Length: 267
View 1 (cartoon, rainbow, N blue to C red):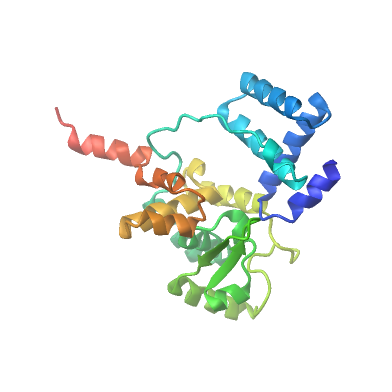
View 2: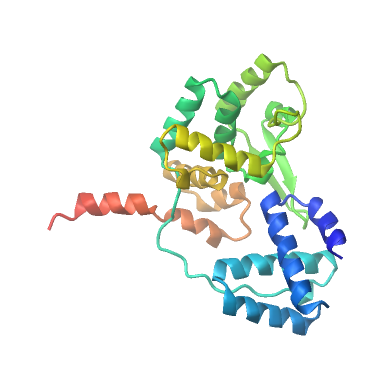
């Protein structure tokens, strides 16, 4: 069963981290309960709630729900536990740090990594989507992705980024294929991107806690709302199923809250 589930996951657009987490959840369930039944699924959820934080519980439940989808038992899918959201966004790279990061990479001739963070922050792509971008998509100016339900999501490549990326590709004489390859010429992994970005953060004196692929997706959303206060459009661009997910970007980051408090309160 585990091999069948792994083969199913390999056909999805999920990141490598998500695939690993979902496989771990399925193995954990199988080791503890064996057969997949409604009763055992409920027991697994109760055990998770008793032993783990809500975020971990929901990650494991997402894994099991994905497995249930793979075997056509969607009606058995488990509901998630409620997570108390903080009234602020945490660990999001600031606009100033993003601009400094871009400039530092460019000044050092690290164009590959310059374009990694440019594409993440200028398109709002997830890192699992970033590694699917090809030269052909840059030429078109967009990438179309389809969810399992057949829903279309279009990731736009802004004109300024498109023009700069085409110049970079031209200098490398690359006119087709995946944009982001490793030294062996294979498509880079999401884990490889995360690790290298942390190294560059340390090199340039940026807090590594705010430098991870999804942080640049957060940056995209925050910057977009600062210039275009259309949250429904942003939800479409981000590929969110519910606009409620997008509303988190209306909140200030912890750093922004601190700055406002310091500037306003003088009593």
